[in-house]
Image 1: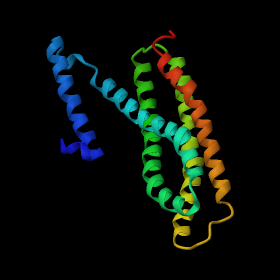
Image 2: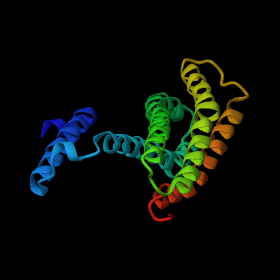
Image 3: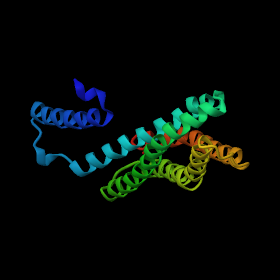
Image 4: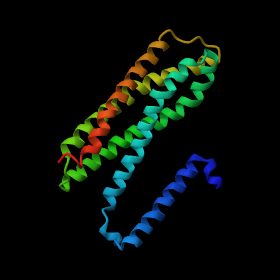
Length: 195
């Protein structure tokens, strides 16, 4: 079980397990491979996986990380922020992009096939697009400046006076996304129930 030591190897084994289980499902149900809507299934799966990554990190940042970082002293922040935030924000912003792009393609695909719940999904999708814009236009640019300033401060460069405002701006945009995620998830789940 050495693969559990590496998150990337664990993810790879998870994908392999999914393939084995889907093959088992097909065998148990007698469903032919050609009878499944593989494009729609894989698109929805990508949307879910990316969305869980994105929203999971959004909740981590808002419910845990913001208070944790406030509790740290300056020298400790200079160690934690450059090590934690670049990787976390990388998964966060790319998760947002993949979620929204896969969601748009999935919405168009389902709508073209006569899928129901288009209005509810449209509401959820619009909220998701607003959230993704917040990630790329506000949260990430401000966090990138903070990471650079903290990295420079660790080398002796004084922190810029604007750094507190960058943090506040990123925090408020993240809190808006946290708030929007609640109705967004409701409408994403409601699509098949509100016909």
